[in-house]
Amino acid sequence: MLFAFFLCGLFLCFPSPSEAVLWNKIVASFDGTALTLWDVKREFHLNHLTPSTPPTKDGLREMAKTMIVEMLVIREAEDFNIGALTTSEINDIFTRFKRKFKNQNKFQSFVSEYLWTEEELKRILSRPVRVERFIREKIFSAYIFITDEEIEAYLRDHKGIKRGEARERLRKQRLYENLQDWSANLKNRSNLRTVWD
Image 1 (cartoon, rainbow, N blue to C red):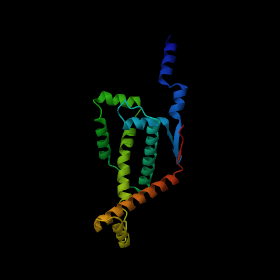
Image 2: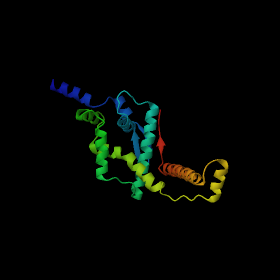
Image 3: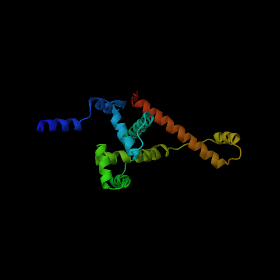
Image 4: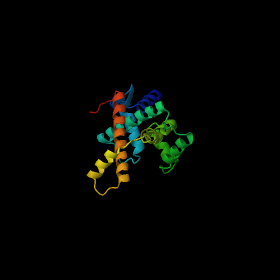
């Protein structure tokens, strides 16, 4: 009887083989890092706390793209030692996340369901903030030189705009182009591969 109870408990603790294959399915890899479907589903639910929104395939794909880009940017940030957060900032982000739950039991239920550790949550919740800080410090702080000829051409094509506004628009356009180039270069250097059914 005890052995039967043990076996029953054992099978309840482990997913069926089909679930195990699904959870462990690698959906992307980059620089020797594998991203599994389980990783993507966990982060999807972290970003969409309402249980009534089951993840769609497209939703999971978008989540995977976001995760990959953020992880690549964090690696770059660490290489340049830019965008680090203080312990206090990380704890504030974590505290704000916990407040999204009605009570401590709801938070613990979420943590248990998706097998989160506090350190994992802190790392993942602070990742977008670090990315934004890195981009702001590294990319947007770059000096962009706009020539008088570029401004004159822009003013000819866009009537009624003042010179200062034309310069700012051209600067923003150049920043966006630089960001796109940098992002494409980062992806190319990372041996990125994605796999979806």
